[in-house]
Length: 57
Image (cartoon, rainbow, N blue to C red; front, side):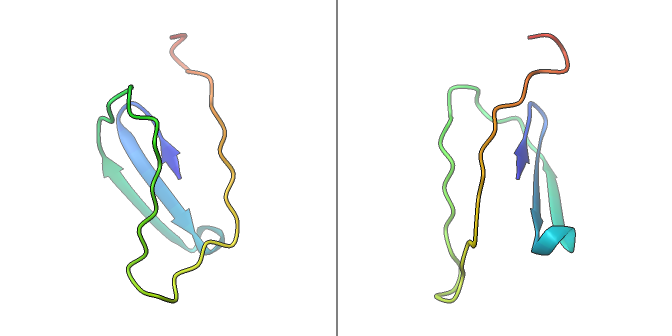
């Protein structure tokens, strides 16, 4: 999942499935929450990285 100033992108199954949506997240909101749709939903692994701005902010 990539979240930046103007979009949210989610990739699953080694990139086989992808979703992108235009959004402007609130900079103060730093929480991430996964809500399973079914009981058999699993997350095998996750990593979080803070990326530097390409715009120098």
